[in-house]
Amino acid sequence: MTTSSEMAAAASTCLDGCSCCAAPLKRSSHAPANEQSLRRWAWALTALTIGWNSLEAVIATASGLIAGSIALVGFGLDSVVEVSSALIISWRLLQQTTDHQANERAERRAVRLIAISFIGIGVYVTYDSVMKLLGLGEAPERSPVGLVLVTLSVVVMPSLAWAKRRVATDLGSVALRADAAQTNLCTYLSAVVLLGLAANALVGWWWMDPLAGLAVAALAVREGIEAWRSGDLCAC
Image 1 (cartoon, rainbow, N blue to C red):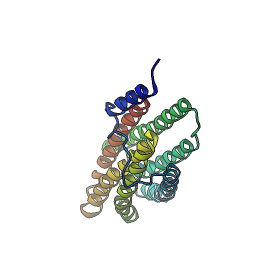
Image 2 (cartoon, rainbow, N blue to C red):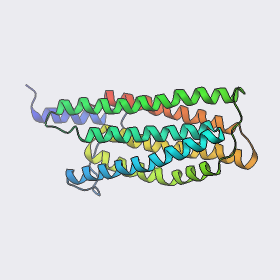
Image 3 (cartoon, one colour):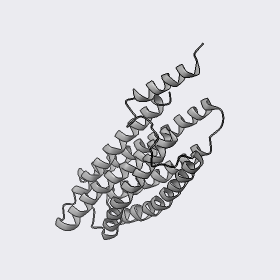
Image 4 (cartoon, rainbow, N blue to C red):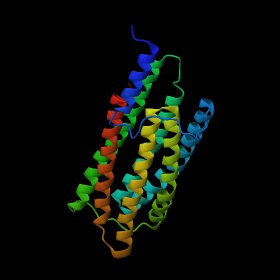
């Protein structure tokens, strides 16, 4: 019969050898030692994510549709999925029970729902970007509102992702770490979309917009695949 110490050693080996995880789940010396406090932090970060990205989704999608910018629309859709991801994490935090196997199953479901969200964005934005590059749609116009929004996002998203990663590590939550990865992806998306919007606004390079859209799609699909794998391999 396997002893508890052997099981602990096996779990540690699994986490250390899991290629999909960014790092072994070790408690930070600066994080709150109390799990209840950690959960309050998780809820606060989730609420902030929902609030910011709801605003971001509405403004980015609306301004993107008005300007015909697929990069901005894709950015807005990513914000919609970011809200969905935060709602999934809310559900995950409510799933804590004494049944550890049930917790692991809930963890995998949460991570894979996040993965599907990533991939869905990638497919849609790829299609629309290719259509525009082939001349099957109107060239995107300038969007000052979108430019300001994306610039703000470049500042907000890295801070939010950093805080989520710390809490995810201390809670040992793969789902929250996947959510942090999605928030981090939003930082890259913001930078790419900012480049496309700025190029169009400053020098009239409209084709930079759908190219930025393709970059958004590639990042989304990559993160979706990684999130799917993490839900499958790291729930040891």
